[in-house]
Image 1 (cartoon, one colour):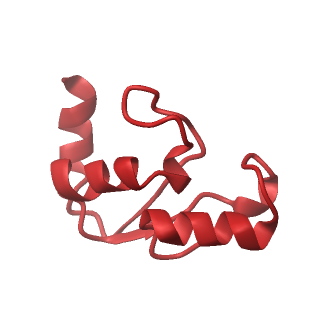
Image 2: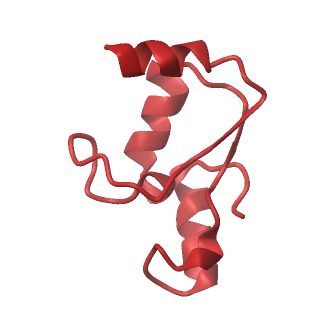
Amino acid sequence: APLMTTCRASADLPAAMTAHVVFSAVDDRPATCSASVIRLIRERIGFGGLLLSDDLGMEALTGSLPERAAAARAAGCDIAL
């Protein structure tokens, strides 16, 4: 519950960044490429600001750079970095 309270307190910020971490209770894909995690951020937390991916060039994700960018955008990130 403390994490959700912190997240909801951040819901009104103008921008936020995803992370390449896996929240296995939600999805087996990294948050940046998970529509389920992005939906949780948007709907349950109520974040309506600009959502940026974490750095896609650090090679924490699989696939080519264009594939990583496409996956982040398809999941719901507004900007793929």
